[in-house]
Length: 520
Image (cartoon, rainbow, N blue to C red; front, side):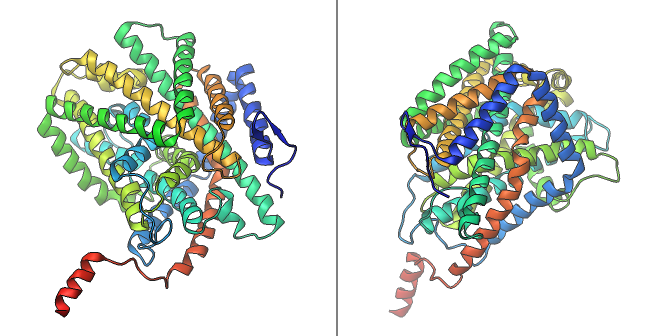
């Protein structure tokens, strides 16, 4: 299939993937603006069917990615570099982790940091709430949703792209590993469909996440300065966010996204340290250590836990499976972005940095915010858990009022949420531009402007509902067809990497020096 046809308009090459994706996404955006209730109802109905009807499929996919990641990190391919044998990483380790973390789930952690542990604490599946046992289960479930499964999904998506792009010197497209399975025009056609489905997954995942973030910023402003909680306020917030991420997009990855990601991580670390030091410090660290043991002890069972005998399939669909599909929806976006910034890393180093480090940070994040929230419920005045059920977007800001300088912390949290969302939208627009410009690692600015605008339109359409549930449904809609694409990618990757089994390992300077000393 030819890469392009029909010439150029305003600096944009009219290739088929770009045109088909543009028309489909624009059509959905128009539908949401014209008939928001119809779009919301359709999204909710579709995702509910896929979650309850084939829930086992989603759990097996994501658990399989975790097992595959462990094999790649510890097995015969651990030494393989995502690049040439002599290539060094493009970014420092700190900047690398900051960028992948900010692009992956930064805003989501702030949104659910207090709310999710308290939700499960008050209403745990299959047991009485607000007990020590419920608290322990709450953190195990939260870490299941935000831990190894999530980052292993991102890691596999990224590793496949990085391997073919930097090791095999092929285009950084979702279709590249798939076309290796189906040579000729058949592979090109299947690859084009895969790229379009990838664009769909990214756009819907971004729109859902930006909607949730906008609603939380609106709720925070309402708590802190009394701004109205209406659609007009949501439009104002989205407009400011749009202008900001478009400006950052124009600057580029090396400066814009890197700078914002480093700022994000510094503020996030300072916020979590403040809460830990001025909150129930000992209780937070005890919660962290306890949750590590509980999570890793229960992980083998939780990784295959659908609760059919308890009749709780609806709970599993609404929480665990929704999260797993959400990570799949973000897979092509975060995967391509992480691949772009991970050149020169070995597979073992990649797995440690992309999967293990963010998981441990996420666990401490929930132990600090969620642990302090549970402490307030068990030993303080309480009331936050009840608020989570009434309006989850307000929970964080009410929680921060329990700390010294609570209002200032609220404004800091708002700034952090805003920058995390800008970083996600920025990197998402970059990835969409890559995917629709035939894999250009430095896509032209018109691509970024077009996709940034379309994501904003779809977000506004979703904001009409004002519902977190609709936002979640939008975020996972694109992942359903993309899951088949991802499985084909993995098959192509495992087929290609077999050639590395006999490749020489990287030289180890320390081992060589020791050997030389023994020889003398």
